[in-house]
Amino acid sequence: MLSPLALAAGPASPADLLAARMQMGFSLGWHIIIACLGVGMPGLLLFVEWRAVRAGDADLMRLARRWAKGIGVLFAVGAVSGTILSFEMGLLWPGLMDVYGQVIGVPFAMEGVAFFIEAIFLGIYLYAWDRLPPRTHLLSGLPIAIAGVASAFFVVSANAWMNQPRGFDLENGRVTRVDPMAAMFNPATLHQTVHMIIAAFMVAGFGTAAVYAVGMLRGRRDRYHRLGFLIPFTLAAVLSPIQIFVGDYAARVLAEHQPTKLAAAEALFRTGTHAPLSFGGVVRNDTLHWAVEVPSALSILVGFSPATLVKGLDQVPRADRPPVNPVHWGFDVMVAIGFFLLLISAWLAAAWWRRRDLPRPRLFLWLAALAGVAAVVAVEAGWIVTEVGRQPWIAFGRMRTVEAVNPAPGLWVGFLIVLLVYLLLTVATVYVLRVMTRAALVRAVAPQERA
Image 1 (cartoon, one colour):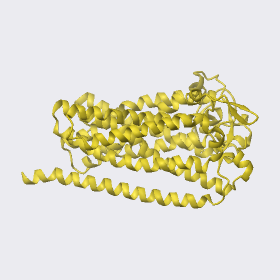
Image 2: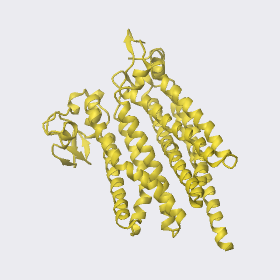
Image 3: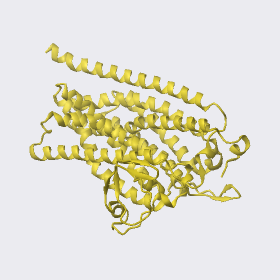
Image 4: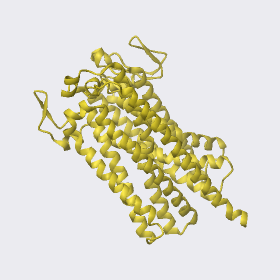
């Protein structure tokens, strides 16, 4: 269904459509890293501060204060990138907002409320640290953690609606009888929000632990670095098997509600029973070449039986199929990293169970440092599956992406400007965090030198 804007101005050129998609994809891919840290880090911070206050532990309190400063920087940067994304929704995709804005406006408005709650209490938390009693200060941080998770839920529920549009009727091309709650709590909401929130805590956990793993590889084996590694890594390790079960559930939901996306993720072109799971390979001429297949595994995954019928891409007109190679490889990368994170988590659990200590080989620390980057890559790969796997629809089955894009020419200019902005943001963020890290190291070494 073409929006009134697209009908009035005519369709966008293929080049401008590509520019809009690249700009949105790049902005989302950049912001999601900061957003994951913003969702997961406050919970870690509050746990560390709670333990520090309860036990009077100086090392834990030092961790809490340092993490709080980092969260402050990341929140400021995330506010900038999040604002850019909110403008892009209206500027790049006016067709979607013109037709369906009243349907999906509620979660965006509620996310705005959560953002302001987070900002207000973060200011109190950071600037009143030495002005409030310890327990009162700790309690002032709870709204930050709650609002961060709530923000993630509201934003992802809006994206879930794009995968499963609900909560409205269409009469003569006009949206009627809008039910915002039905739109927000659509069939994709549960698995997408849970999957994303767990992923955010895993990125925060493995990412934070990776920083201290690098420090330990450089010889800093003091208690401060061990705590800085163990606490976030343990949280992420506990969540790793849970995330795999959530992903398994999500695949079955896709089989029911978005079989085209599942077929693209598995590069399955033929509908049938005993459908295999395929790892790797390249799609050429509607055939997957050089893949490793596990016979009947996809049918078992979907319906717990090899006889389960799984729909392939042959059930979908070619014009309605997503690009298979990026979706298939994104899915494989996400799954492979998930099991990699599970294995190193199990390694730590086994060593701790036997000796109450970290694994002794340096290889473990190298892999733990790699896990921080790997967790981010897994999230990015998952969003490729979610977004590219929905194409050519911006609202699945309701509106095509080409119908929603801004028909004005010159979208490439905006894309180049956004690239420059994000380059500056990246350089500024890395610089500030490095300065903070060096200052913290100087303060930590100075007492030892005086002694």
